Amino acid sequence: MERLMPIAIKRPLAKHRLWGRVRPPRGRYFGGKKPFLFVRALRRGKQPTRLGELRMAAGRLEVRLAKNDAEIAAAQRLRYEVFYEELSAKASPEVAAERRDFDRFDPFCDHLIVLDHAEAPARVVGVYRLLRRDMAARVGQFYTQDEFNIRKLLRGGRQVLELGRSCVHPDFRSAGVMNLMWRALAHYIVMHDVKILFGCASFPGADPEKHELALSYLYQKHLAPSQIRPRAIRKRFVNMNRLSEESVDEKDAQLAIPPLLRGYLRLGGVIGDGAVVDEQFDTLDVCIVVRTDQLAEDYARRYQRMRDKTGVDAAGAPLGA
Image 1 (cartoon, one colour):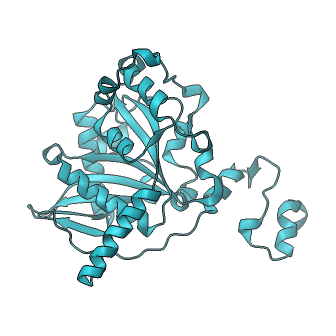
Image 2: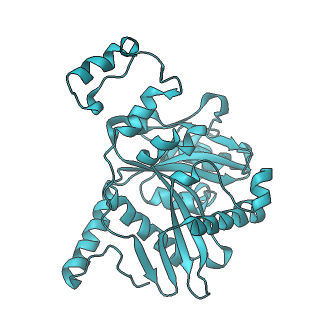
């Protein structure tokens, strides 16, 4: 077995060099299973350090991470109600039989849930699925990689966080619920030293012609810098720059952008090159990227002031509406 070990790995091991400094072998695959370079890029990030329980409350609502399989299943049932019953996603036989939206990524993710305590037991009314790079290393890829090349985002070993499967029950679609989720997400970013948020943001309806105004505006005004720009994979690439700049009315284009995507743009989000048709969910997806530098700094300053004023650690402290 030792004779078959690539020299690029054997020599550093013999010198007791840290794994993070080992140069990968020249071959495309390591161990014959997954591309070595991608797995190495995932594992190069800093290991997360938890700073306390993530829990925030506002009136009857509480937001925190799901603690057990029952709470994850409740989040999946809400996702099914929104994506498959309210919208027009196409369920597989397994998903339809259980009336839960689930896939192979769920066991490796953190599930941020909003609970309504007006009922007993509490009901899950909002959800975000969170996948860090150390979690993605265990499953072998990010969900986004089925649609976009995100190699540039993984350079340098920064902690990155994929956002996905975000939805809220129709009775709770208010700014207060979304603000509560975003406050919890901001704390999660600080807890895990996340540098970049990314994920697939969706337009309802898979026809690119229907969204040409918004797509052209996003490409012309919010395209990501080349050094971090995702790109739709070649076989699924849909051109976004469909209209001339002169024919794009910014106000009309902004109104044509889905609310969640507008929220990411307000945080300084930028867009990858190319869109992708998602036939299962009947959507047209773009890749959003948000650098968290300013977001995390603002959040950290806010809760440091709270800690100084009250003498209580903000992690896990109930917050007013």
